[in-house]
Structures are given as C-alpha cells and as structure tokens.
Image (tube, rainbow over all chains, first blue to last red):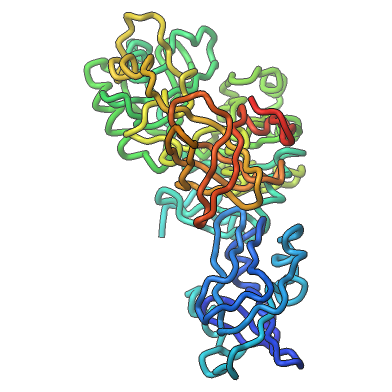
Length: 131
Length: 368
C-alpha cells in the first residue's frame, strides 16, 4: 500500500485537492480510484473559465472498464486543465498525485476544510471499504 | 463469496483483482488489463476459464438429439474432434445460450456452455434429452485453461504428454483431441491462435505455473472481454439473450438451414424472421470522435430509426473505441451515438475489428 501524500486533502469520491500558493486548488483522483478504474483510456475535461458548483460533474474519466464522473469537490472557476491527459490519459494511472492532475480551480469562497478528509482519515476510509 | 476455481489461490498470489462473474470469484486483471490484452495479441496469455460449464453427452442417439437441440447441424461434424459453434434456441427463436460442441465419437459429444447460464442450460438440456435417452453429465471435476496468442501453442506444448505432443501441435483450427487426461482444443475467444485445455482440476495449478514460467501472461476477464470484442465474438447476456434471435445477433452463420426437414427447436420462428424486411442489423461500429462507446448507448440513424450498442469499449489494439450494435434495417454506413447527451459520429465497419494480431478494419477512410 502506497503512502498517501501528506499535503493533500481527500474526498469520499476518491478525489484529492492541493492548495497552491496563489490560492488556487489542484484536483485529481486518488491512487485508490485509479486502481479501481483500471487502465485509463479517455478523459473528458471541462473548459477553462467554466464555473462549477460544488458536486457538479466537471470531468469524466474512462477506463477500459467503465466511465466515472469526477465531481467538483468545491465551487469555483476552472483556471487550468491538464491538456496532456487528452493524449496520455494513463498519466492518471502512473502518477495520480503528480502528472495525472486533472484541473485547477479558483475557489468561489474560502472553502470549508471540515468537509474534506486528512490523509489519515482518508486512509481509514479506504481501509474500511476493503473490509 | 462465490464459487472458486482450482486456480483461485494462484490468482490471489499473483495479486489479481477478483470480481464476481456469474457466481464465481474470478480474476478481472493482474495489474494492467491493457498489457494483458497486448500480451495475447503479440505473444501469449493464459486465462482461467474453469468457470465455464462442460457437459458431456453420451448415448446412441446423441447426434439426433443435438440435431434437435441446437440451430447448427452437427451433421457438419465429419471428423472426430471437430468443433462446431452454435446456439440453443427457445421455441420463439430466442437464444438460451451459445456453445461449442466437440464431436468425440459417434455416441459422445462435449458441450461447453456459459458459466452464468449454467443452471438453466443444464435444466433445459436435461429436459430436452429425456425422450432421446441421452446421458447428460456435467464435468465439474475438470478445470479449463485457455492459452491464446501467436506463441501460445508452442509455449504450451511442453505441458502436453510427450506421446501426444506432435498430434496436439498438428491439430487444425477448430479441432480437438483427448491426450491422456488432458483434452486439447484449438479454439478460443480472443481472435488469436491457441488452445483451450481441459484437465482434472487437481492438475490445473501445475499446468498454470508451467505456462506462466514459459512466458504466458496471466490474463483476466477484462482482457478476455476487450479481446473478444475486437474479434467481434458475441457475449451471451450482452449481445444476445432469450428475447433475441441469432438472426439479429450476427449469428446467421451458426444456423444450419439445410436440410430443410431438420426440425430444431426455434426453427419456425427463425424462418419467419429470416426474410423479413424489418430484421435488424447487427454491426460493428468505429467511433470517429473522441470518447468511449459503452453498452446500452443509443444509436441514431438519421431518417431511419434508433438502435442500441450491445457491447462497447475501448480497443487497445486500435487505440479507438469500437462497439457491436443492433440497429434498424436499412442501407447505411454511418450513424450517431448518444454519449452523455452529445451525439458522436460512428462508422459501420465490417467485423472482426482485429484478429491474428492485425487490425482488419480501415481506420481512416473508406466505409464498407
């Protein structure tokens, strides 16, 4: 079992968030999520500039096996998308917390961290799923 | 917890992701479904298919019984060991299951039917067999390993008893033989050369280890599905079921129309649909836009009507999405598929998409 990056926050939908110095937030899916999906073959990304509400479907990741929605964990505006995923979706498999990032958002409000999980809490969450 | 094959511990040791399939705990993949897929197209892969149901028929009237039970005509089987793919139909012409029949001797045939349909298949076969006095014997004592790929037979040959090895390697496609305790058939579900091996369950783990040690990649049900989709081989319960005629599932070639007097179950219904102008087409689709086609997505043929994708997915060999679909009658070679509210362009292509390691469709341009 790989160690979860300690500087990220996590959601029950198996997404991760990283607060950047400029106030934006980078979002991707977790190693657990990419493992469950299997080999990624297609990623549908939102447009830069698009506004999304919390819990909106903002992207779709498709593996050989299935399609899975990526939900906006916070409300905000899309400021960047990982365009390389269009040609190399398997970056999500090989480096889910790095090169496999999906979007960067500018949050609408100071977001409420209490709804997100710490690395320890998320580890507990996925351990419980496996039982 | 589901049923477990003789190789379940092997799958666990190899780190397989286990899923339920028709009541069986089976490997989905051992890490990367795509790599397993490519291994079979380029070299060799080994699949545990012990969940499949093997049924042996025995009796003086076995042939006459099968000529009544299935849509293809076992009279086509002239040589011992020859195999025939066909379907068992209900009285309405719907597919109860698809199966392979091996001609063992004049009184003995081996059937391999699907795992998920085991109970209903056995009940149906036994019910129909009654008047023919044919013994129906399920072979739950056997395990089954498919070894598939251009190098599969050569690599597996060392697992065959020496005195049978040459005969095994000389088997033509769709032929089988009994080699000591092992039954060897040059059949498969991938579009590649290879064997399907049946053996006593206790022997399976050792054979499995031998195949892997000689370079066969362990492959799960995930790769099995993308390989069979590229080869345009139907999956029961997805591409056809009891409400679907083989004539609308691309299985016309598995129906033995001649001799006209052979009365097999479902024949009347097939005859009615056979020349109907409304008979739906069963076609291969290639997605021209970006995205992935999936089962049950709606196919729209402008000015003609709507159909449905029965099996859709991503083709690792082609690098694009492909599908099998049941679509309205008519002369057309383009359609649209609705994917998450968007209409994407697809082209109708002649199947198989891929077989024997090569892409068989024209990806860039010409239609049929």
